[in-house]
Image (cartoon, rainbow, N blue to C red; front, side):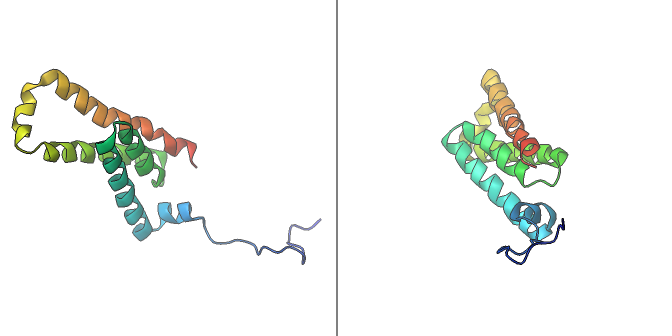
Length: 124
C-alpha cells in the first residue's frame, strides 16, 4: 500500500502548521497571543479568584515549552498582583501593615497561576 493520498481523497495534504504551533513559534503571533492571554486572565482575576488559574493556563498554553509556560504563568501572577496594587490606589500604603492578608494575597497571586500552568503540560 502507498502512503500517498488516493485520487478520491477530498482533502489535500496539510503542510501548514496548526494555529497553536504558529503562535508558539512565530514571534509576532506569539507576542499578540501572550499579551491577549495575560490580559484576559487578569481581567478574569478581577472578577473571581479562579481567574488567576485561568491567567496561568492561558499564558502557559501559548508558550513554546513547558518551562517557559511556568515562567509565563509566574509573570501573569506578577501582572495580576501589580494590577491589584494599582487598583487599591492610595490604600496601597496601608497594605504592608496587614501581614496575614498580604501573605495570602501574594501566595495566591503566584501559586494559582502556577497551578494553571499545568495546562501547558496537558496541551501539547
